[in-house]
Length: 399
Image 1: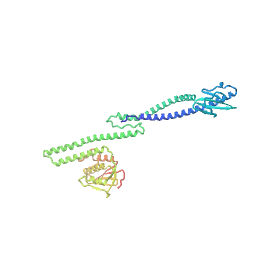
Image 2: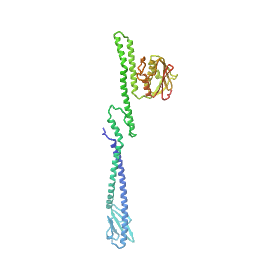
Image 3: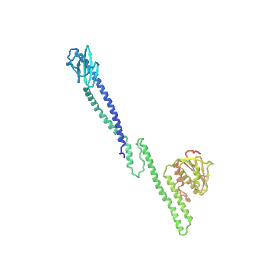
Image 4: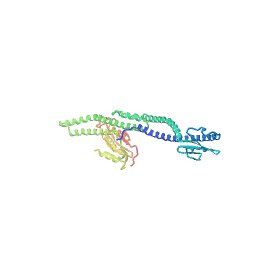
């Protein structure tokens, strides 16, 4: 099991590693350049002092009295003592221990040597001052990186804290104000998830409320019918009717709960003609199907939700209309039509129904909810004693 880590710590470590590596390379290049410049400067000094020594020797000044720089050794070719470096006729040459410049004039030659130890000492004195100036700069850069990373990750910490401290029953959306573009999709996705949970929670509460509201009367009726049957006053047909109504209400409530739960609708090829035939076969009453003599009408939608929708439309037409029900399937629409009963109206409110109606008052509510979920356009009209409810699909299907 890997240990926990923080994004800020990882970013700081990696950025500082890059900064330190770059700084080290820059320092190495700078020190190399410094050593090269020091060598050139000291070589120029040797050349100047060698020429000066020739001038003094030509003027009769003894070699012992010629002033030299720190770390210099003067050798004159007339001297009896050998030079501490190998003989070389080149004007400038170096060994591991010495840097030598040779000058000649009028048959007189001198060599001035400078020890490598002296040059190393000079180099490290200059390099030390250079490093002393650079180290505070590196510390400032490191502190700047740490503070910048912490400030940049502030929105992420605030988002994490708001989620961690949120109460389990708090389904309000997260604030996306001030979030960077990288974190905004996370918060928006979380808000979608919270909204879905809220819808499910509301659907659960609505289902319980709807069930308590709508089942009270049918249950009381069924209980009264069974009591009357036991006392010899009722009939089995009356009990069957009560149970049938109770079953129909429960079925509608379950359909409404599913529609309001906001489940993600599938997008799959659906044959409207086959779907209509399958749904209409469930009804005992013969219902006319007008498919335009086209054997197949295909749209992309959710077959299960479409079946629930069509089943409710047909059931509403049978319960609240008169005459034959006709279902039309077109290239991009599905319609249910029949004659309107006297005083009929299209009621879309939940449990909104006429006084004489034996329905649940949920049919059109279910239809509207599913149509919205599937992205369908729902057209309703009552004209010339005819009721027409049509569904139009957003895209033209392929036949």
